[in-house]
Length: 523
Image (cartoon, rainbow, N blue to C red):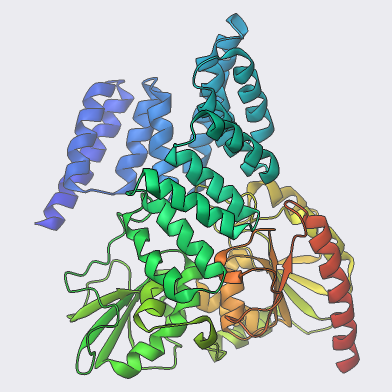
């Protein structure tokens, strides 16, 4: 029955393409609704809908379709179409404002478009213009302006704006939540927790506040309360639709697993999955049988876990099992504490045949080899404060070392600079999956990277890993530490102030020079 529904949906897609060519847009949209009912979450249907909406003049709805796709798929064509739509909407806003530059509604629409085009400075100027005109809804404007300032990594200014908004609406849970987020970004965790407490007092159903409060507690090392409250993530808009695919009971440590089969499954990003796979052997020792479900790109790597476990990929049929547990709930289920993090490394390993393939590909070794990853996966929303521009690493490229790019996806903004740096060996784009990446990393002396899946992979392999972190960092890197209880071979290089990547790179280059000199002495 399911295959028949897919077939009918694909037939409708062919018909829809014909209708679009004839500019019969309403009929095409009606057929798209039929196709979506037959084959839900099929991205080509959503893509076609976005194209039809754009061609029929419904640009904002088209943008919504493309952004929904980009949340799970970083397809360059979709990203390009989204940008075309946004620029089309921007031009329309510019035209209207040329006729009436004090039209606040259009100013705000343009500010929103500029936000999504990552032109945050221009967005802030539009919010300032709107604040100078508008008498009503000023709190909302201060809030949106502060959101743009956060994207510019100017949290102190954002905090001022949230405070202004809260003077006008002191009992507004959303504003309190946003201020909690900026306090968290400034590493003022007690103040952040107080804001989340207040937000929940006015809106007890605000799951996002409970989840962010759990992040604060985890960052402070309070695993008991932090992981217990982290279960609220399943009520958030971000994760409430994530499904295990299992109809069996959730296991959180209460039932005895002896003689039982448990399904452990990846719930979020690649890095999260790699980090929390360390708990799988602990479950496998207690269970009769263990199944681990991960994205296809991680399946081969997961087979290197040192325990009896069956690996299945997302989309594969699930074997029979008695219980299930998402990977990031395992510390709660196992009673994990900061002091008991399983940190034996390596807990993942590269395949010898692939290591040899990359050894040959890299050729003879003349200088220390450093793997470099400067940005995470390109999906919406792009993490502006976590990722770096490649050119920021320019000082590193003048050292007597070989730089190996580990970037699978090179951001558009870095493509030209990368082309101008022939000394950087572009290997990342050749990688087939994470097992392949692990084999390449095994041929390197060390890895330097932002907080991304590569950081977790290199750390899990036991490779010397230097991770450059924004000022606030993620909860998993705790506060002010320069080591990591998760990865004993990792060193953390933190911004001294928000946005200060130059200081981080200067410190890192000095350390690399010293390390490289020692390495050359050993050759």
